[in-house]
Amino acid sequence: MLGKLRLIALAGLFIGGLAQAADNLTIDVHRDANCGCCKDWILHLENNGFTVNDHVEANMGSFKQTAGVPPRLGSCHTAIINGQFVEGHVPAEQIHLLQNRPDLLGIAVPGMPVGSPGMEYGDRKDPYQVVGLTRSGEVEVIAEY
Ligand SMILES: [Cu+2]
Image (cartoon, rainbow, N blue to C red):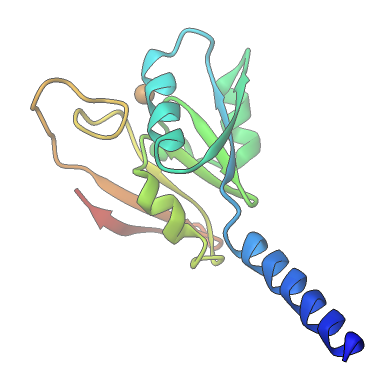
């Protein structure tokens, strides 16, 4: 009887561990020191359940190159989560969905569209796309806002 209980307790620990691995919400954000919209995006992530490690970089250009972000997809900050990049003002919900797309190197909102998370400017909302970069270098539209 005692042995069986112990097994159940162990199974619970195991399932708990799996759930954690499948939903790892710790993200590393790399940005310039004086980037205000980057800080606003970090707040957006924290308000949506992410734990943010904030890194101030001296040279974002070279960091983006190392992270594999093509210049045409570039924005201000570059985040890394579970080995994939998240470039620019990507909505938090799209970062959750990224966990279902291990085939992508990363996702991006190129430029800095007004109305994207961290780029709020009154009621103005410019349309923008979230795009994904495949491992073969193709860019595909993931979502439109
Ligand atoms: Cu920005």
